[in-house]
Image (cartoon, rainbow, N blue to C red; front, side, top):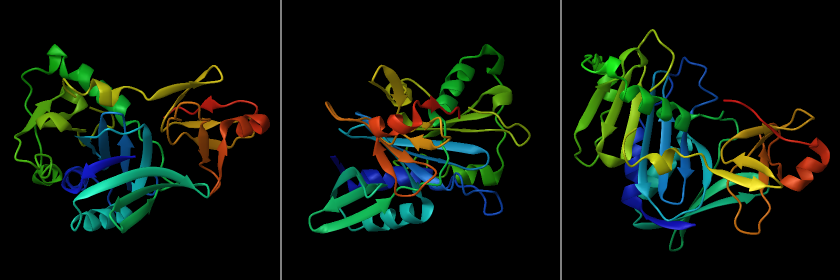
Length: 269
């Protein structure tokens, strides 16, 4: 749980809002804004067919990740218009992962979107870091259409200059101030594309339980073929609870899952 200025939360939602898959795409698996919390920052992550946008704002929170459908994200954004200081809680109730936003007696509960596939945004931005320092891309021009530029119109939401940096054939890196990163791939290339100060945001959120490492936001399969999602890092002395990606409203302690499923194997992105 943490408290955040409503304007700061609205700001990161606005920065990533333009990045959404087109209606004629098979968008069901990614039609969401991912809210991802680390001890130092709350991240908002969104993607379109050719772009990825990540905005963040400082918080003193835990470690969890929750994809929120675009309609629910829009409802949250509207609710924030009349809010000031908002308390944010990540909870699992009745097998469902939820985000609870509270200010005084006013409260909005937003469900996580169970259908959303994992988006490896940290791995993609790590690739961009390596491409950024490649001497082969220095001096290359950046080519963007007017429609491309519109996608980045909210990146500098606080008046920051927006920098477009060529990554060669990998695409274009987009930087706006210290708390926004994005990349765009060329029309004919389907591979990816961060900056000093982002190391903590891009670090994997690992924890160890019963001698095995698990990562928040990652999917695992047991011997029955059931897929489980790790929604949050457990607190001290707590047993991790996983959420079923195959059956709605199923959230179980990891020991109960292992008693039936025998083992858990990470599913690659």
